[in-house]
Length: 140
Image 1 (tube, rainbow, N blue to C red):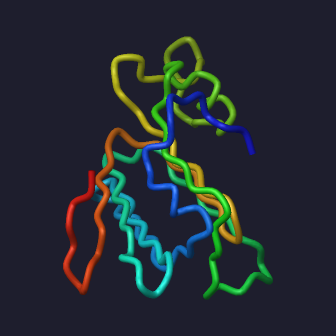
Image 2 (image 1 turned 135 degrees about the vertical axis):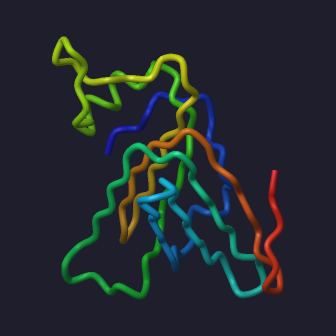
């Protein structure tokens, strides 16, 4: 899978080699909520993507649906107006010249997850939370 042009990964490094145990897409709020399990003594990490404009998830038909082990989890800022990435994902919205729409005046982020489950998303914002003893705390 191609990597998006980026400055750096906005997510904690410990999400690599984690398990994704919940993924909820709210079509009306345009949000994607991802809950990651790291290890029994570590807090769960929750990533909420806001103003999602693209979301794609794939897994193998015969894969164990309860595992979802992840090898790579990256959220990076798109730095080239998204032209290459939007072409690669075949973003379906075109302008009047029949070219893929990009958003040069907006800050956008590309989420790329690879492992037993693969997810790609493009969004305008994100919030990180750590879930400790049932309560959620915003993480910086």
